[in-house]
Length: 348
Image (spheres, rainbow, N blue to C red):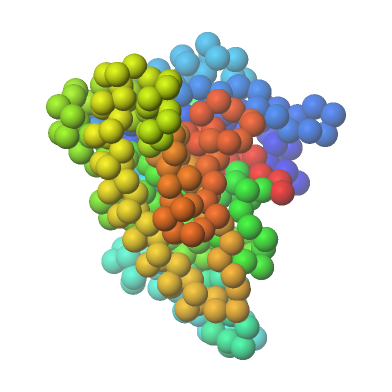
């Protein structure tokens, strides 16, 4: 049964980002799924937890933008989610996997047993390997319950809480490589960049790329060019990594001068991202030595910056594409996680 069929009205996927809240609701007609409504708005503070005022504003925005119903599927702030790869007994042993997974997750994350919610799935085995591993993600009740209470007070019915990164992977499956290869989704978010390695259409590894959040790039742009954050943000999004040809023929002299300074700042940031990606792919090559690395898919605010995918493609000698090229939504890279939370599964 599909996610859309479980509710009277299709659920609304709500992605709570550091800087923005994004929402998507899907519709079905003649057996086809399409975007029925979408919205996004900036957040008012730096607290990753959504406030009652923000939840109330979200309710108003959804009503104004044609969303139907109040059933939502949420991603908690990424900072509140934990993940672990856990070694397990062989499946043939008949060991109680749910019990073992919960105990090991609590131990690895230093959590009190019974004070968190978690989900887990099998990591595909390497050829010629007898080891059994699972991937587990979880959130402490102390982090999830305030979010649930805040949404309930604003009149929402929270059906599910899910990982925004895993939801972005689900929405991007059609852009990832073949199931028998290892692909990656890099969410270039504001507070951090987060990487998911995908094999056999499941996430097999995820990590935070330290110091690679889009916010750190914007701060560097502001400092280097002496701009206010809003001006630096506009320049970053509208100019990006432009070529000399673009600068000379399509931009005025002021933007051209700024672009020549902006480009090395962005490329230095992307070189750091590439270094972190290479480290992660070395892990993938060790764990899945019998498979090829096929593609890197970019999502999040950083994927909206012009030229980013092309630069990483050239510097890493890899196949790098952006979800911004998708046809479902404007600014699709920003909305990818919300799409997945709403139930969209990308088709190849």
